[in-house]
Length: 184
Image (tube, rainbow, N blue to C red; front, side, top):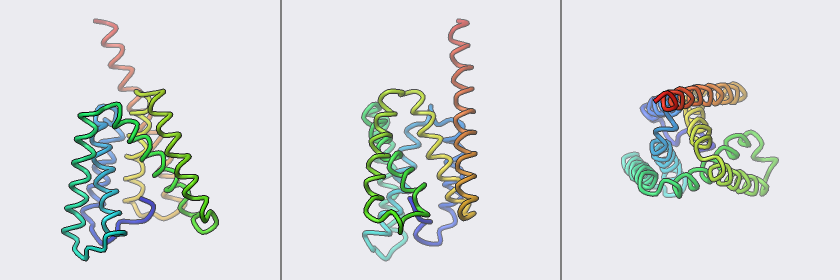
């Protein structure tokens, strides 16, 4: 979601921060939460931007519905959900990072988003476990840095730092689990 939330909904910022923290720490195990959260916040942004419903309640309802769909798809079709998640998160990450350059990029922006989405799919397919860690950390870091409303470039630095923290925390948790499995 390249712009701020579509309306003054402070609870959404707190929800984004809480979800972001959970994903930074437990994202590999809660991949369904990453896709559900992405569905919710993406649905919130899309409903406001393209549907012009005129009702915050309807926009939140659509966002909630898309969040549930994302979570259900993640649980029932894990591999497909990871590929779809890689596609959406890869495209979203490129849009988010390119946001300051929108005017200069013009029509190239969507090509960059498609390339980012394709790389997200490839990354998810080749490195499934690592992809869960990185993709959930991307979403967690993005949600927190976006909700912080610090403005550029501080938001970008916060995003990069949180991404690194999320990857390190989840990777260390993964190594601990493997050690315990090897000891058994």
